[in-house]
Length: 268
Image (cartoon, rainbow, N blue to C red; front, side, top):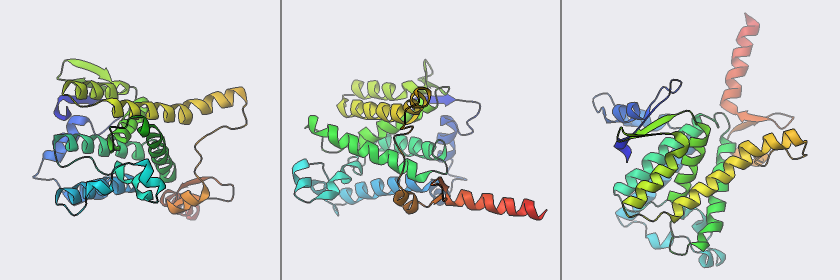
């Protein structure tokens, strides 16, 4: 699916085709520079998933200790709340498929809607993990949940970029909100189970409604609670967000830049 899908948007500098073409241009491609340009939250998740899969491939890590199991979690193996989202199967086409869309849409979300708000982005991921873990027992045949989180991020990215046009095989054209459904259909055609993909889309829709639709409705109707997802101060502190005396936050690096620029303007 990766080489068959392309998109175009005037305001987006990096198109799908440009991304793939640039990444494959080994003559001028600097792997370390590309890696360090990934925003911190996306980089941590991508690195953790890649190292976990690599550890399982060379038999340093046993996947038996990673899969999701509620009984073992209640027995004290708390890490199983997070480890199922780090293993995407052994190195294969399916693994590359998941990694590509994970890093692409995770990065674009962090650089777009969540720019300067890492705690808000972490809160979105935690909501996705918690929701998928609650729904997973209903689908007892699935023990690794990373693909559902990938579909969640893809869904949210698509809904926030509705004017991005994409195409498949140069014949089927669609806009970004339909991307997760195209991915789901392609997976169905090649024989992959689609129930976890549907879970990811459902959780993504729930987050989109609570984060972007509900605040508008609450403001119009004068409800007291305007926003559902408000990161606690501790999470903002851990993520490096700047929090002023009124409780408003932002990336501490962005705040520092604004302060420096303001000082220079004052001196001038």
